[in-house]
Amino acid sequence: MSNGSEGNFVTTDGRNIGGVMMEMKNITLRFGGVVALENISFNILEGEVRAIIGPNGAGKSSMLNVISGFYIPQEGEVIFQGSPRPSLKPFEVAHQGIARTFQNIALFEGMSVLDNVMTGRLTKMKTGIFSQMIWAGKAEREEIENREAVEKIIDFLEIQAIRKTPVSRLPYGLKKRVELARALAAEPNLLLLDEPMAGMNVEEKQDMSRFILDVNSEFGTTIALIEHDMGVVMDLSDRVVVMDYGRKIGDGTPDEVRNNQEVIDAYLGVSHD
Amino acid sequence: MPDQVLFAAEVMLNGLMAGVLYSLVALGFVLIFKASGIFNYAQGVMALFAALTLVGIMDGQVPFSHLINAIFGTNIHHFGWHTPALLAIILTIMVMVLFAWLVQRFIFRHLVNQEPIILFMATIGLAYFLEGVGDLMWGSDIKKLDVGIPKGMNETIESITHGAFGYGFFIDNLDIFATFVAIILVAILVCFSQYTKQGRALRAVADDHQAALSVGISLSYIWILVWSIAGFVALVAGTIWGAKSGVQFSLSLIALKALPVLMLGGFTSIPGAIIGGLIIGVGEKLFEFLVGPWIGGATENWFAYVLALLFLVFRPQGLFGEKIIERV
Image 1 (cartoon, rainbow over the protein chains, first blue to last red):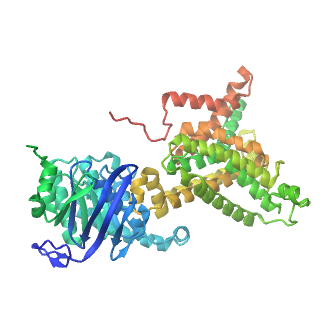
Image 2: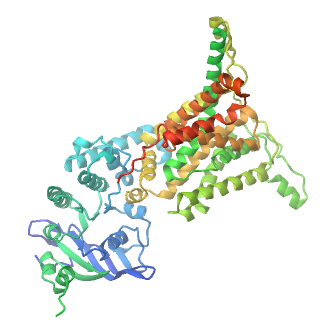
Image 3: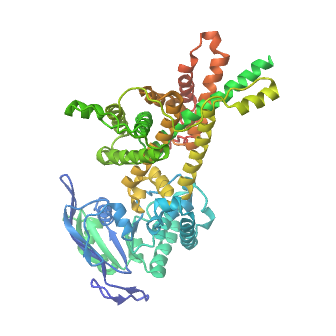
């Protein structure tokens, strides 16, 4: 497999990787005097699993928040599907087909699993408030269609058994899966996962890895994920961006990154002899 | 003795009816609190303002007439027409939606992510501001509100109970009307929040702002929606209170009665607001009837607050509020 930063090739396991979906150009993000991201550029290809890794505090989550519109960078440009993206609000980004999960699970705790996943369909539901009130038939049909799509995702992620359970009663690992289901329900072009495996045991990690790969290969969804567990990332992703102290220190296939001296230094420390 | 029992039953029924009115005011509080975590002190004043606007539009009053007359030396007070009740109600709803938009645009948009106490203080400011605007717009005299709600004793109930028990119950038609309105309103609100996409979005926002944003919900749209609905509930409450005792500025004080109702029912529960209102209504009427004579009467002024105090001590989340669990 080539480095392929230009895109349009077929992977060894037979998935089609398309052109550049999103390009981050010279992104700089500051909080007061603290520079969280410093002049970072990389791209995400259509259909690939792109990982962003780095030690704690490297700026990975900040990067993801820039992509999903929660943070607005002071400098740089985000190019999405060929055109520069103006600074959008997070909910507007969601309407562009970018869904995300959060590092510290952000589910609607008071609602059932089914309702949570249904909220993921909000961007797909078009009837306005008045037709919802007056023209109940159309709204009902829309509800049923979306419900079907949601049931498929629930089946796919194997959470049928807990469909009606309030989310607040679920264990951590399942909550993470429900959050993934909600993001998938939006049928996103780009799926952003913020530490999808954090705090999980080995078995849960394996399940989650399997789901991520399945989503990518079956739906062709482009995935950008953050992880600090190197092992997991290397198995999952097509290409990896490595960050440290807000800078990009490596970018390439897992093998390339693994042998990059700067990356090794960042992870293992440098001996000063 | 049976006479006493029947009389107590009548007092209870009247208490239930009075409780419905408390519930209507409390409902507006719950809606806004659930969706945005803001305790809206201005809810009572919103009810007053809605009622004032309704009367003003119906009577064809010129808004800000005192101000206009003082500046331009004119002497206009009325347009000289009367607006039909239904049209006036629709226009008032539009005013309340505009009000919701203004509140969101000029106050709460600038206070995103602030502490609840700061948002609360903002609503206190809003309450006094709105009271002033209401005064300036429509004048401070007591107004009669007549939108065609039936009033006076219900003769059917009187004659039936008279036939059955030999004692006629006095139930006001207005109270019966208010009860039906409250039932319909609650049914609509529950259906809206459970079965529509906006309702789901509303519950989502109430639960987690970040997550709501990430699934594509615009927070300011939802908040304008919620304040509009709260404005509508305020209009219903204001109209019924106004029809009962005239539209006057003391109307805004009924908001204070909604506080114990909320303590009882829980700040986040729509059914809680209803049940809480009914308990307070029945409780204070029965207490006044049974215990009042022994301790000099006028217990209705404080009974609700003492009951709320007891609830705060023994069950701070109220009857239906979300249970407070601290994980260690």
